[in-house]
Length: 111
Length: 115
Image (tube, rainbow over all chains, first blue to last red; front, top):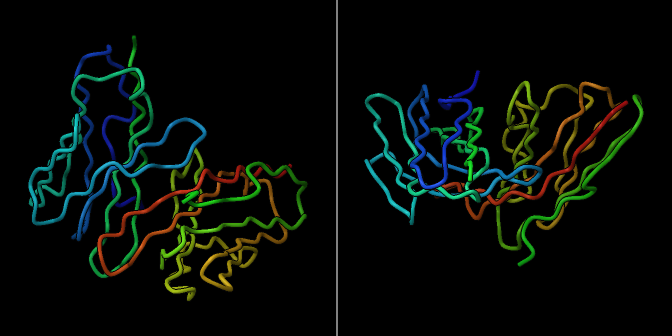
């Protein structure tokens, strides 16, 4: 079964609005990462948050991590048409040394 | 650096044929991962190598799949014989070091269609 599950599966918003995607996982992690995939392309790493961190920022991205709830959120502020893509969370499992990806959230930004 | 390079980008083959996918990781990266992506199952980790040694192949679907990493700059994923259910996009990714934060750089993928 998937370690990480994103919610919602699909999200459509207007340009300029904020987009929030959530990720839940099941077991203890070393860190949690978010990746973006444009249609027909490979995944691109966006941001990493360690298990002892609660919040991290990178440009228009804000990631939070709640290890007690085993959940994370990715916020994209002031969205742009170029943000249209699928977004995946990936968990780096303790003791496993491998990244397990969720099913992704398909984000559409309408101009 | 040109990034992770995969070939071929697209492959169409008939059921029963052998398929070989190739990957050149980023120079200096010690770990290499093969993933498969389908609409139904999402991104599945098939196998990963560290310093050219296979560490975990528990995701390899069955004996028809095999992977090798003869040196630090080359890996292959082979399917023999291929079946229609193997149709998917196969991604190779590399990372600098398994012991630290495992940040992956992905290739563009190889889209496989088995007829």
